[in-house]
Length: 407
Image (cartoon, rainbow, N blue to C red):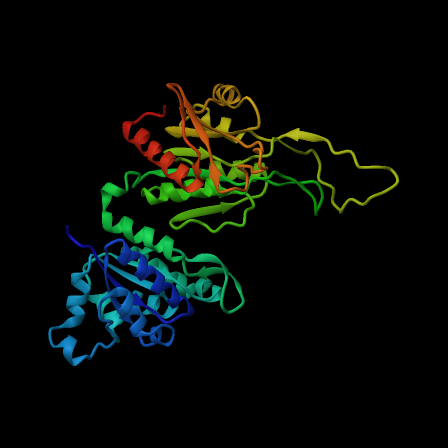
């Protein structure tokens, strides 16, 4: 068996601790890891820790008499199947973008003829700075792949984009890159996914919404990206991180979701997982409603646009494959078949969201049990984690698109 090899460059940032878990995952998967630790990186993790997990010596010095006697930086950069920089600090990205080679890490990056992947990690203001964004664009144009950054709380106490992607996400991206095109059957495909709830305002404080967590939709977006698709995730309000390699458009209302979906067209497939509010208040009160002696206010509801039916309608921008979701509490198959006919989509993925005997529900949970209905009939899938349901659906989508059919 041909062992895959990764040259891991660990930059200087608090997120360097995640590199240790990443090395552990790669070694467990049988991938050889050769670490390069920058001087700044060594302030956060030790060479001994990296060496123990990688089961290989850690390189730190461009001017090592032992390593450089055989032009070690050239051998390092060419012997790997992939060069991974994690964390990729603002400084490392800037020096790589400008072709500097003043230490072992940047020299190896300049000397390599292998694919390069970076996992950025920095303060939100550093990430958003025009210089960093210019460097990002330069590196991307040079063919560098990126994983993350995520959005969230940072060690500096601030919140926003710039947090290094989690080791599991980086591991998946590395394995996909090492496995090559056959592991990415959706490469070159553009896919739209909707996820989460919508929230329709009643007044500046109150909204009409539902219990959708967005977990299934986000899992599907991640699974499609894992297969190489270029995924646009149109998401209602959730507390979930954007999956690696996925572009998220954040919305609140059904009308905003419809506009974002139309803006994402044309796509090869549209997967409508979002729990879209069927109705919205006809008028939004300008000030917060107060309790009063007159009783509750009258709220008149009007119908929201039907996003799934709109995407399924015939026209030049109709996706080759349109998949809808049906969340039902009774008569699951009958209601799902009726929705398939009514909406004009190619498949319906139906799930029962009624609480079970223990009070557990699909909405907000980590498990799901679905049936997939199309023109050929129905497939009943066993109960599984939402990530596993997503992987199975993504594989089915890839097969359908490869066959050139929607049903």
